[in-house]
Structures are given as C-alpha cells and as structure tokens.
Image 1 (cartoon, rainbow, N blue to C red):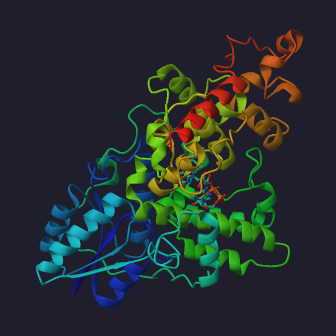
Image 2 (image 1 turned 45 degrees about the vertical axis):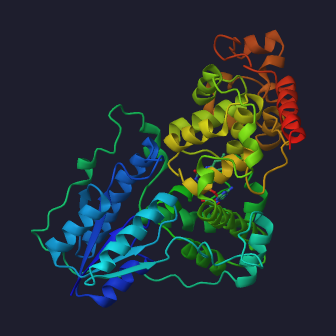
Image 3 (image 1 turned 90 degrees about the vertical axis):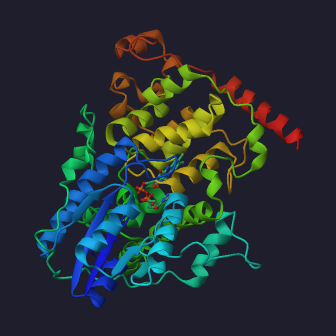
Length: 478
Ligand code: FAD
C-alpha cells in the first residue's frame, strides 16, 4: 500500500502525527509539498516568508534524505497536483496536518470531499499545530471566547500536559522515477538581494528550531517573565517563524518547558506558556471570526475616520524614518532581519494607527510582507488589539508613547544604537528624544536633525489628542 503525506505548515519529522499515521498504515510513503503560488486568498506569501520557506523546504528535504526518503516538490493548484500524484504513485491514502487559515480550511474541506466521493481514497487529517484546536475550548453555552484571560483559564483547566511523538528513525524510499522540482525552481528567493541580514539571524528548519528551543530553555526561560519586554536583551525565544512553518510544534515546546521545571524556572515558565496561549487564542479567533483579517472585530470601527491617503506618513514609518528612535529602530530591525521584538511591534503599531491615524490594515500588510513569522492569526490579532478594534482590545486610550517606552524598555539605548547607528553617539538621556538634545550635544554626536536623522514627523501630544477625539466621536455615534 502507498500513502502520501502532504506537508504544509508542519515542516518537520518529529511530533508529526500525519507522517506517523501514514508510516503505520502503508509500506510506501511519499512526502509531498505543493507550492500553490495563487493560494492564500488575499494573503499570498510575503517576501520574507518566501525566503524562509525556501530554506525550510531545503532543510526538510535534507532531513528526509538522511532517513532514506526525499521530498517530492510540485507546483500548481493543490487539488490538481494531488490528484496527479495519486494517479502517478498509485497511492490510496493521503495524510495531512490541519491548517487554520480560512482559505486553507476551505481548500482542505473541498479536497477531502472530492477525494472521499471517489470512494477509493483514505483521507486523514491530524492536529500538529495547536494544543487545543478551534472548537475544543468554548464558553458555557458554546460561544467562542473573545477575551484572552478566560480562554487561558479554560486552557489551564483542561491541562497542558502532552507527550510529543518522536521522529522516525528510517523512512521507505521514494521511487526514482517520481519527478519533483528542486527547491530553487520555485523562485522563492529575492532577485534583488535584500536578505543578507536574514542569514545571520536565522537557521530555518527543524534542527534550527530545536537548537533555538534548547538554548532558550537553558538560558532564557528562568528570567523570561522579567526580560520578555526588553528588546535590548536576548530574553525571548524567537521561535515564532519556526512555529509558523511548523518546524516545531507547541506540544514539543510545552514538553521541553515542563521537563525543565524547577522552583527557579517556575515564574518564567508560567509566563512563557501564557504567551504561547496567545498564539492558540489568535488561532481560535481567526477560526471563529474569519472576516477579521480584513474587517475590525468590533464593527463600530468600520466608521473610524482614518487618514486614508497619508502615503508620506506610511512610507516614513515603513522606512524607519519617523524621527522617533524606538519606532525607527523597530522598523529597521524588521527590514534587516524579518523580525521585530513584541514590545516594539506594539509600539510601532500604536504609532501608525493612533499617532498617524493610518488604517491598521496598511500596517498588517507591511508586516505580512516583511516578517519571517508572518502569521494570519497572530498578525491579525496583534494589529486589531493594538489598534483597539479587536478582541481583548487594549483600551483605546492606551496610546504607546515611544519616548517613554524607549526609556523604560531600552534604558541604555542599546537597541536604538544598534538599529539607528546615526544616533549612536547620543548620550542615554536624549537617545529616545534627540529633538530635545542641546545643539552642542547633537554636534558632539555628529547628529544633524533633519539631515542625518529626521525631525519627528508628528507631534506626540497633539496627534494623541486627535486620535482620542476621533474615538470619542465614534463612541458618541453608537
Ligand atoms: P516569545 O515571547 O518567545 O513567545 C513564544 C511564542 O508565543 C511566540 O513564538 C509566538 O508563537 C507566541 N506568542 C508570543 N506572543 C504572542 C502574541 N502577542 N500573540 C500571538 N502569539 C504570541 N506573531 C507571529 O507569530 N506572527 C505575526 O505575524 C505577528 N504579528 C504581530 C503583529 C503585531 C502588531 C503585534 C503586536 C504582535 C504580533 N505577533 C505576531 C505576536 C508577537 O509579537 C510575536 O509572536 C513574538 O514577538 C515572536 O517572538 P518570540 O518567538 O521570541 O516570542
């Protein structure tokens, strides 16, 4: 018997239930990845994600080859390619791990329906990506949670214990005559090489994910609750792109955290698992409210008076040239490495949506294009939460102040100095507000505001008041 394993957002061999089930059921197992460039609805892969995918597929193929198999890579519409492969290989079963993006759910349901109708194929799907899938945790009465804390409590009540599956130690070979593309044929890498900074920052693939987890459990977990808001320190796990592509699963992470538990680690572990639960919550929200990728969860925000055409403000934000050092550092870190610290993500998102009044969707689109961890569930929640129009919204009047945030979470300015080197010579007391530095201090640091570094593009106080007034009008209209 021959079975196919259709890899999608589960690019790993360990704790991969679809692979395990296929190996248990068939003598021949064909690992397949289908690149469907037009899939993804209105959210096709962004450039940074394409970079990651190239390297992740390369790593997966190498891992499969080490165990005697290989990845059969094809391109085209998922169903047509799958149907063709079933015919070519004589496979009678398809296994996959479930995806949770609305367009993927619709695609999978349709493929499953058609294959099942043939009456000839076994179609089996599994959960590799979440601790609890959408629908498993509901409020009394069956309603979905819209607020995080009760969701997290429900998760804790049900328990987080889990035993991840081991990786196979050998795999059946794939017939030589079954053709596949080389990863390079997919054309995922950029033609203009803007990705230098990515190579030094990341090791896509299962081994890179495992290494990152081990390093974090070893040296980051114990102090996570204290350092997780510090972009200047290596206090977080940086597992987000690995999780998004399924190079590691949450069960493996929870298991590793639990194994490391000791009194010194407990507070850090609790805070870390809570953060992982935000990811679960985001996936639940997306599944229950799929329209939120493009529309505010809180419908009254449809009428919000965004500054729709402020292209200059949007470009300054994207380029990291707003004149606010913490915002600019974040946007440049994003461009150079495909990633940004969570504390800074909240700050730049608040700045864009509240101080500049640019619609949150513009920010979400830019993140989608530039993040290696671009994830429809997490990105949608992050943007709606910060803009104040989503589930569990921060109160609208919470407008992050980039100067105070910088002073508090980057107290020595190390993060700003790293990503905005033209300000590196400024002393700590003005590094987050260079426009208030004395002329002699600026001269001494070689900073010419408006020339070497921009003057602030917006006044914090009046733009905050403008946002609050717009919000008050919206509320009054309710
Ligand atoms: P850690 O602090 O080590 O946390 C571990 C894991 O928990 C993360 O890898 C992530 O999977 C999950 N997690 C942590 N915080 C959150 C959160 N607030 N929401 C959801 N999951 C979380 N995360 C993405 O993975 N993809 C996105 O596209 C994305 N877009 C965002 C946009 C905005 C505006 C904001 C405010 C946040 C966004 N986040 C996104 C959430 C968060 O910023 C990242 O998950 C986190 O910075 C990743 O770094 P880490 O792996 O070191 O996190």
